[in-house]
Image 1 (cartoon, helix red, strand yellow):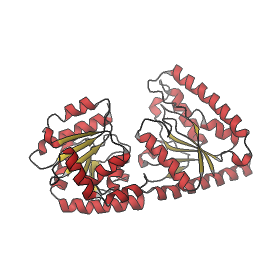
Image 2 (image 1 turned 135 degrees about the horizontal axis):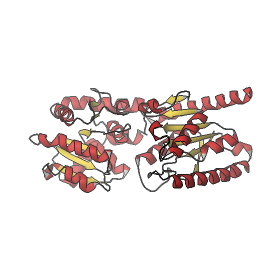
Image 3 (image 1 turned 90 degrees about the vertical axis):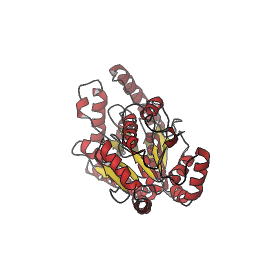
Image 4 (image 1 turned 90 degrees about the horizontal axis):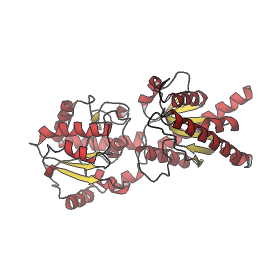
Amino acid sequence: MRIAFYAPMKPPDHPVPSGDRHMARLFLQAFEEAGHQVELACRLRSREPKGDPQRQDRLKRLGDRLAERLLRHYRARPSAERPQVWFTYHLYYKAPDWVGPKVARELGIPYLVAEASVAYKRADGPWDAGHRAILAALAQSAAVVTVNPHDAACLPDGITLEAIKPFLDTRPFRQTAEQTAPARKALAQSQDLDPDQPWLLAVAMMRQGDKLASYRLLAQALAPLQDRPWQLLIVGDGPARKDVEAAFAQIAPERLRYLGERAPEALLEIYAAGDLFVWPAVNEAYGMALLEAQSLGVPVIAARTGGVPAVIKDGTTGLLTPPEDAVAFREAITTLLDQPGKRREMASAAIEKSTREHDLSSASRELDAILQRALRSEAVRENAG
């Protein structure tokens, strides 16, 4: 099947890494693993963060022009080489799809969406145009794929929801999991770490808002635990780095290692060397880093928020705490610091769960089935018309 793919927030070939780009790439990989031909239809970044109606109007008009250009391009092809499905990844009021609905409608092909949300409070406000565009796109959609189960509550009635679990390609994780001892030894040497102490991991961008709030809550939870053996490895960087460092100023410097931003392959080795992933997950969607850590056998402590419970099985692959509760988070850390045997049990369970429930191959099969259902529904609709 030929799929026209679009990510309004950030195209999957954008040079700047982010969680959004990473998930877009995983969707592309899942489709290709199922045997589909995927082409990046458009690179327009429609995100308008300031609530500027004039800029939104310019983006809409640009999207209309790009849609017309794509239609001319596709119609010039033989019919067998045109897209059979349009798939848009990640829609919300600040980043609507100004291109896909028109192209899909004119070509008579199903329009599918993944990870969409609706904020009804934005109606009649500065992002009203984006809000209305999201509602129109969802009304046209043949299906809306939800990765975060929390999103379903934010979607209008009457649309077809297709739920899949958060996923990643666990193959490189499984390979790296077999190299835990060498990874730990190398990291201990390069970062002057004590291999006999538990290593806590936190992996996240350093930016204002929820990420910084999570870092601050983590520092607040750890500060009273300095009578216990542990060291914290922080992986990430960004414009709020000084604020993050200030939050951890109350913790002895010898306990902290700031590793900065790391390439994916280097990050795998850091996960493999860790003992416990600790992230308060303030307003987290589901947290790809939480899933990555578990795929390498690192139990996770996180808040029970958003789609996080879809990734972490409380008491089995980690511990969940009430949102934004530093005391409960501290108690959970204490519990697993004091129970190395429990950490080992959780490590094995985390790998098993990731491989069984969250692997790319499972998502690939599910997405293929969703595409097939959308095509059948479109054929039934056309025959009925």
